Image (cartoon, rainbow, N blue to C red; front, side, top):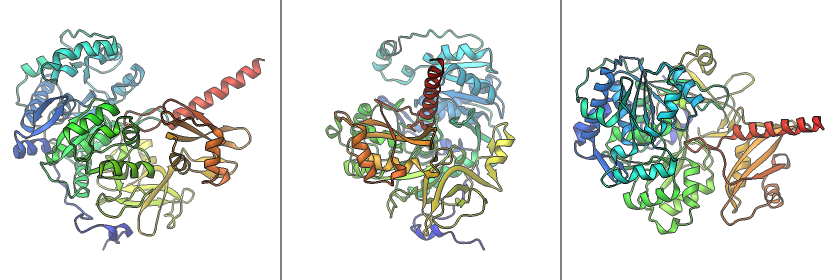
Length: 568
């Protein structure tokens, strides 16, 4: 008999500790939803709405066209789109055709794009017209055979579809003329030609891949995470079980997290399709637009990231809008400051809890309860059928309660491995356990706490310092909008603590004020020795602050200073 895990005692009776997962291809969720909800609206995009039936029909057409271009089971199809109807249709159409989706960030440079296309071996890419020059410039050095080009205006209602090209020209100073040929295909014409019939492909959900999701590549080149249909189905069904108060067919989900990131793809897109929720698609995060959208469209669920919630809370027009429709939010991608959590709940009246996951786990593994007891500062407890341990980093034995070590997870949502990287797979997956690279500990009740990335831990003068702890204190200062802490090279201490700060609008901060504040709240060795004030911090598309980029900038700056000194 399996040993009872300490966290299982905290589960309310409405959430099962184990689930009977559907062993079927991910795309069948769309087919089931179209049968159940038919003309109910599935997507809202800048005033245009599509029903579940319409999304299914368009996806079938796309599957038909992919197959007419020679796509067979296991081929890779890249999707380089923001959150638009096309991103949903291309995703499910590719799966129906038996392809493996390769989510591609629209912000990629030519170098990053060429690397991913070569590494994945993608044969087809779907991109926006304004991204076509970038794709065209690298196409000849990659395995790409076909490019399908779409535009934001393709799914806009009248008269927005006529006005948008002028807005786009002004915004990007770019007009791209798409000329169809044997290798370049216009989305609108594709949809006119294609039929909603395709050749179904037999899929083994536990073995066959649905997705190649590339990690951020903060250390070395990005790796393609191999996620099966079963991985993704299981994580969505866990998500549904955790949010047990939500009503199938009735929720409205805010889709501001990008679908090209696994967090938005699972918690917004796949979850909404499975349970029949309407998705409000937002191509990019703009705090003002988001406030207007919440006020007008009345979303009930709002998966997000701390930087998104911070952006809303600090918008000067916040009080003009009604955010009371929001009932539940799970925050991920970065630590959620307690101060942000409390303020957001006060403004909305809803619940905002912190969760945890990785690209390699589809992504969610832990979360706090939305409606039951939560532990502030904790990532919560493992989801159904998810096991988690803390391993001592020196002995790799299971750590004691409260002892900091590397967080490891195991469950049906854990990746198959890294694409064409057997050595990396072997180093990360140990006897079924995924070694996360995050440092944390578990308390006696089974609640987990992340203290930092293993690679982000600062060792200054022999002391171990966890950036998150320092950041939590900085966020408590009334003048701090955003803060990130990093270890930068120091000739005496090895590393020293540096804080990068974005002050709130209209607030003037200086080093002395923050230094005094930190000394009142932190042990002396944890207090930042250096401060840098900025207008903004570098972030990923999902809102995670790029700590490593700041460290790299610091190292480069120090090297240049040393070079100048040597020259003199």
